[in-house]
Structures are given as structure tokens and as C-alpha cells.
Length: 126
Image (cartoon, rainbow, N blue to C red; front, side, top):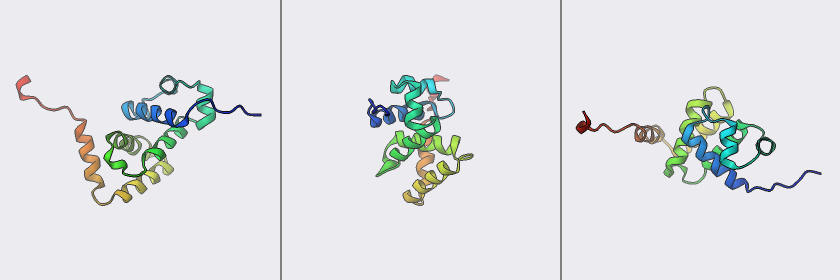
């Protein structure tokens, strides 16, 4: 008989979302996720199957409601588009659905968020 889960899945997903949003999918190791979620490696794999499975769950939870108002969700979506969508059709489809739901200004929304990450130019520091 399987043991019941002793962790709150919502908390684990929120912590994983923070890590993926901060360092990206490819740069994120399973060790980073183990540290952030306080789960053992085996528990992480048993609950989500893989790092990709956890990311998919994170994205699924993030892209609901008025997701476009949350900069952290936009960062996750950008990570999905840049790192996974080119080689992962289910993730690409999820991103496409979210952006189509948002409407015709989706490119502007994502572009503005990308610009938010650029360092500002300070002419006084030249």
C-alpha cells in the first residue's frame, strides 16, 4: 500500500515556479528543485514524474484566470516559450492556447516583460 503524501502540492508547485521563473528551465537542476521544495528526490519524481512534469504542472497552475497581470507568470511563460516550446509540442500548445486566450496584444505583453529585464542605461555612470 502506498504511503500518503506528506507535503502540500500547492506549496511545492509555488516554490518550483519561483525557481523556474528565476533561473529558467534548462539552468534549473533537480537539486535546485529538491532544495527549494524541501522534498526528497524520490518524492519529487514520484509526485511529478520528472523535472519536465513538474514544470508542466507549474505552467498549468500559473496560466489560469488573469495570469497576464502577474510578472512571475509572464516569466514562466517566456521560459516555456524560449526553452521548451521549440522541442515540446504539449508545452507549445499550452503556451499557444494561453496567448490566444489573451488576444492580439500577446506579443506586446511578452515584449514589455522582456524589456523589464533589460538593465537600464544610466548616462551618469559613463
